[in-house]
Image 1 (cartoon, rainbow, N blue to C red):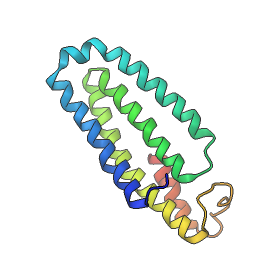
Image 2: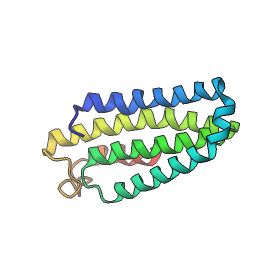
Image 3: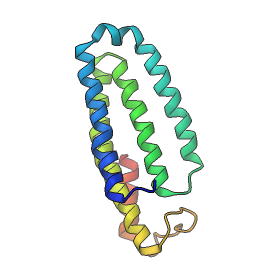
Image 4: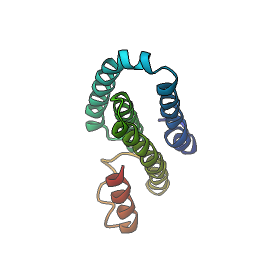
Length: 146
């Protein structure tokens, strides 16, 4: 959370997706090993995603919220891949692409908001639709597509 915005954008947009790509490659290299432990991975990733999403509910720092949502998305990606069918595989692939684009843009919007107001807190920055309507539209579009 205390990393520079460019580092957060690269981490959420590229590096986390590299792990997902590595898992996709691993599915082809060791299918029998993955098949034996797929239910365990699904349970762990869904439990982890659920617990981190509960943590997202109490966040007031926007940058932390986006970072935690990236963790939840990676839990969904792992669950989708470990279903070991084509729908889960392609769903995970599309989720990684969509989240990589949206999360980087959300980190950029947090930085713009921080430069203008001096705070990343949702409690301080509420009501920004009156002052920055076009930025509020971008927030809505990116959050709804994330």
